[in-house]
Length: 313
Image (cartoon, rainbow, N blue to C red; front, side, top):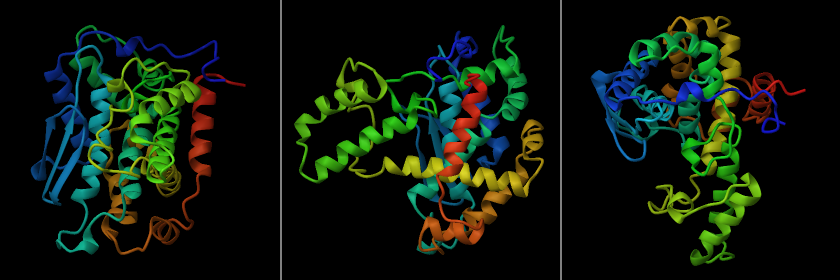
């Protein structure tokens, strides 16, 4: 229904020439505003965004930028900022119990900030004036920017995918790595399986392996089984956002005002400060918000948001 909509949002606000130095400065300003403490970390540029933590007092993030589009750099910075905020707000004992609970939990923190804050209407009412100040001839409204950054399209590249089609990229990768580990798929056959899967799931033709099965850092780094944590994180982030809105009724107004302090403190109270004190993500969620991981909130979030944005019946 979304891809067949007759009223898709325009992507024009994303197009133009955007100097990388200006992008980096703006991203640093925004990620500091949401809670990244640059006194105990730094922000740099890399080919693939990532976060490295040596301790809560030394957490480093990277992002990537291109001068013909500004949003991917910002999304990557906010995403990595969410990881970094988690690391900076763990207790500083250096004990294992004071490390992150799981990678699914970690991804929930990055996706909470990237999607439930950074893709919200409230966020762009706050951030659009900064875009207008930073980039020449940028005269788009907050509503136009909100539509552009949430536009849905079929994408070759996972990290550039919108949040509605992103799960399909994860499903493809999980199916491949599961079958390789089970001995059902030879490594040499991964490119063909990948290309067929992209066509079946997203109706996308893959022009090369560099834009196909070699695009991610995970498998070469032996991070086998990591991709499902992105969906676990997506579902957890949506559930946390639901309960954060319940506990902070004026959450949207705070975001629009650029006041993220109480939201970050809520996440620290519910997630960050506990480290590995719970046996599982389910145990943490049940104790802190009253129920185990429930994908209902993620499904409801996507359905309500994109039904409204694309005016689906």
